Structures are given as structure tokens and as C-alpha cells.
Image 1 (cartoon, helix red, strand yellow):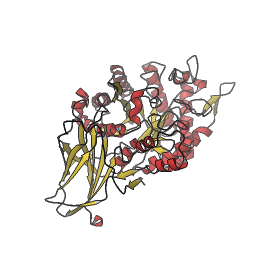
Image 2 (cartoon, rainbow, N blue to C red):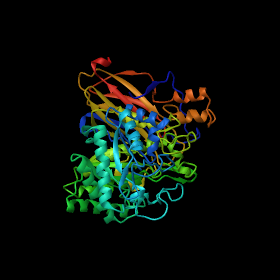
Image 3 (cartoon, rainbow, N blue to C red):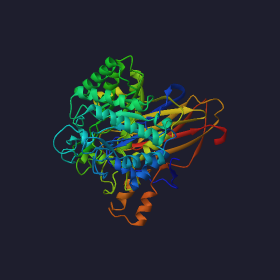
Image 4 (tube, rainbow, N blue to C red):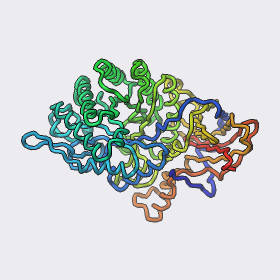
Length: 556
């Protein structure tokens, strides 16, 4: 069950200098629960990470269970290096299972102990694997030089990323691994998994040509389907199609599978923003991420035979390196506080908007974020938790998990649409907007105040009018959850303690007490008039609120 806590009091929120002369203009948001926009797909319920071996470590095991609990829909997990050779000890941007090796005569030797421990943990946590079939076991690697990746040096330089030296052996290995999964976890269970072929073959994650990847894809599908004919297999998991090279690779891949009639059950690609330090401040790049999505959707939409297939954004993030802490890139400081969830909220609505515009079937916005075991507290990795302490971004996903039913119309006179953001980013006025769902006798409205530039600014006065309520909705119960500097935010609590790297047991307890969503105030009952209610709030910059409304008899 999603963690939700109520504060007994609300601290005043002070953001920026009182000397700011111009108060922000009021923003009016209108939600019409009778105006249906389409299904609300749980695109938020997908997560991934490089270091697959963190799955079985203390904080990784605990976080998997938190992820399971935040969503009523199945939570999917994707990880790199599930076929890589090694001792099963994780490092930044590296992990291994040693599932495949060969004896002196070149015959395959399988050792499923590490791989099984990872997938057993997924099973026990109640999450669903998205099995990324990569990278190349050492015995099959065709390249020369070091096998393993070495971060922060050649982090994708190892021959683990080379094409197999024998495609027949690769195909047989895939068949054997999938058959093992079917035997261990059951045919019905494994048939629900998504099998993705490789990761980012358009860049240095693949040390071969596009044509060699296309052969790898064909052979991998054949191996998977030999073990499980009904399996869902897809790819190509390319980088953002905002790049001409990545766009061409995705297009050529779709042309290849169309011509060869190779099975394709879903299409995957990635979308990333680009935060930078500008004028001494973190400045995000939401325009780049949305441009990646827009161009990728446009490519898929050109193929009538494919444009209704599920699209999995198998990495959708503000930038590209989860393991690069803010010590490596100061702009990555956005990951600790409220800028990360505010950015994600602004992106969230626009992903649905772009999918609607192109008529494609988006099913996943996978956040490439998990946890980094035994690192400094709030070191600035792209993670959901730090040493077992939830970060504010995790509470965005909890909010998304509380939204149910179908998407309904939400408009704001302080908002920008996807086209406007792609054209110029969120650099002038902030994006103050809402995303809403409704079903049965309830609705949920997510509201945010986002700006690319992480600068001090006053709170914005916002009025949310929810229309289209049934005539029977005389009294409406309102719960308002908030992510800001003083709510659902262990980071500011940690800083207030003096940023301890060795917290005392009392400090740890206080930080753990910040886990979960916090209510902004006590539940309220609103009187509906002519099928509408109005909620007024001050919304701090880089904050997110979730308004839950319930007009069922049980709520009265």
C-alpha cells in the first residue's frame, strides 16, 4: 500500500527573497471530469538500473518492495548486464551474472545461480521483469581488449558490448536462458514479461554495425520464440530520436523487421533531457526530452503495421547517466530535491499529449533510477532512495499511482503545451499546469509549478475548478498531498540536520519519518454548486500537488 502520512501542522513556505518586487499572477486551472481524453495507462510504473546485482542487496531489496507498493498496476523492472560474465559484484555502471561460459572444448556451461537470485528477488517483491537480453558473455565476445566496462573511464568500452563471435551459439544461449526461466517461474508468468533485445545499439553500447544488430535481433527473437512461442519480444532501445543518427537507426530497424517479417511485439527507444549549469544555477532541458519523444513517435506512426504496437520508452529521464553523481556533474544536483519531481510532472502530461497527437500506443515511461548501495547520503545519483531514505522523486511516482480511472480534460492559463516547450523550453514564465483522471465517484488532479531554471521565485496563487460532477455530488471530500521544501522531502530535513554522512539512530529515524506522501492540510469537505467545486492554493516554484476528490456516499 502506498505510504501516506499526515502532518499535524504546516510550516510556512518561504521561497526566494521578499524583495522580489513583482508578485506572480494568479493562475486558473479548469478540470472537466465529464470530458474523457482516453485511458490512463500506468506508464509511471516502470524502473531500471545498470547495476543488476544491487537487486539482491539490502537497500535494493527494500526499494523493490516500495516500488511494488506504490502502484495498483504491475511494476516492471529493467536492468543491464543480465548476461554479462563476472563475479556478480556490482560497480558503478557494471554488473554481471556469469550465466554463460564454455569449457575447454568450446561447449556451453550454464550457471544460473546469480541470475536466479536476481529474478527470485523480483518474484518475491511482486514486480515484473522486463528482461533486457544483453550484453555478450565473455566466451562469445568478438572484440579485443578489456572485457569489463571501467567507469568513469571507458564506461561502455568493454568487449562485453561486442557482437557475438558465433550467432548460432548466441541464439542457442537465448533459447536455453528463456527455457530456464519458463521452467523456474512458469510459462504463464514468463509470457507476461517483455524481452528487449540489447540497449542503445546506435551508440557505443554496441560495438558493431547496424546490420550486425539487425542480425542479433533476428537471432534473439528466434531463440526466445523457440523456448516460448508466445513471448513478447521487441527493441531496438535506441537513444533519443532527436539525434539524426538515432532516428535513422530506429527507422532502419523498423524497415528491416517489416521487410524480413521478423516478429516485433513492442517498440522501444529512449528520451533524455539535458541539464546544465547556467549563470551559476541548474537549468533543465525538458525541451530535448520531449523532442526525442515527438520525433520517435513520428517515426513509428509512419509504419501502418507497427503504429499501434506498444511503445516502451525504456529510459525516459532528465539526462543520460544515472551513475554520474553531482560530484561528477554539478548540474545533477537537481536529483536530490523538488526540481526532479516537478520536471517529471511537467514531462508526464506531455508524453500522453504527444502519444495522442501521433495516434501511438505509449505504455511506458521507464525511469532509469533505482538506488546506489553504500554510497554517501544524497550524493546526487539519479536514484529513488539514498541509503534506504526515500528521495522526493519517489513521491511523484506515488502520486501517479494514486490516479485512477480515465484521463480527463485539464487546462490552465499558466501552461505551455508540448509544442511550445519543444520550441523554447520553460525559460520565461513557469509552466503551471494540471493532469487529471476520473472514475466512478472520484477524481485526482496533479498540479505543478515548474521552471527549467532552478532559481528562487515566489509561490503562485492557483485556483483549480473541477467541473462536470454529477448532480448527486453535493459534498466532495478533498485530500491534498504536496511535494515541496517542507512536505514529502527528506532532503531538506537532512540538510537541516547539517547534512550528516553518519547520521545517528535518532537522525535516521527522523529521516525515515519523511518517507511517503504528506498531506498539505487536513481533509476538507467542499460544497458542490452546479456540478463544480473550486480549490485555491499557493503553489511554490518546483512543487507538485495531488488533489484527490471523492463524492461517493462512503466519503460523507
